[in-house]
Image (cartoon, rainbow, N blue to C red; front, side, top):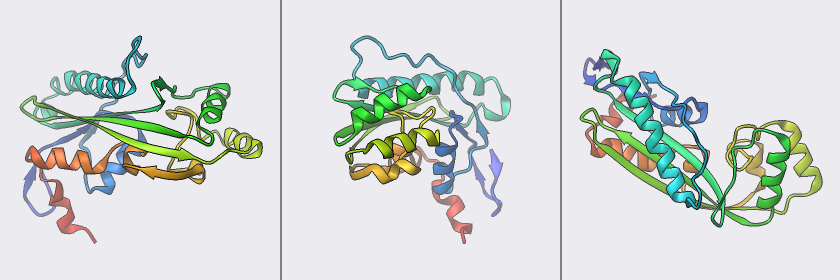
Length: 213
């Protein structure tokens, strides 16, 4: 446990992700992790695995991997832990987290002018070891991308490591014609659902809000 500026106490909080976007979203909600424990797991989809199930499984496996590390550290043994994973899909086809330009180009050509779905799984583990899981589905429609738009975006490098080859919070936000669902889930962490789970499990989510300017 650690004291807050008002002299009260709150449980420690772990973010099981190296994503700066997920950290920024937690901070947006007034939540500052006490530790960041990235979980290195095999993210290869299983044969026939549906996108929703894939997102749920990866979030759970990341939580279990980080939890094993946290339980071995005395100061984190009784912490809350949050993990998440974001999956972009067209129908049942899971798009990769693009690492090379050809991969990103293939994703963007597929997404151009059509609706796709983004599934973000979030897993919260309580100090007692209880797992709470949600998968949030968001529908996103892209404009028809011109050759110049596609080539310019690929040249930016923003796509690297991003599910579906784009980052909605960056330049690719210009491509979005319509979004139905959770914007923060597409960025990487559904804030409404994450905060609701923490709140329901007794984490003092709004404690830091009392001193917010």
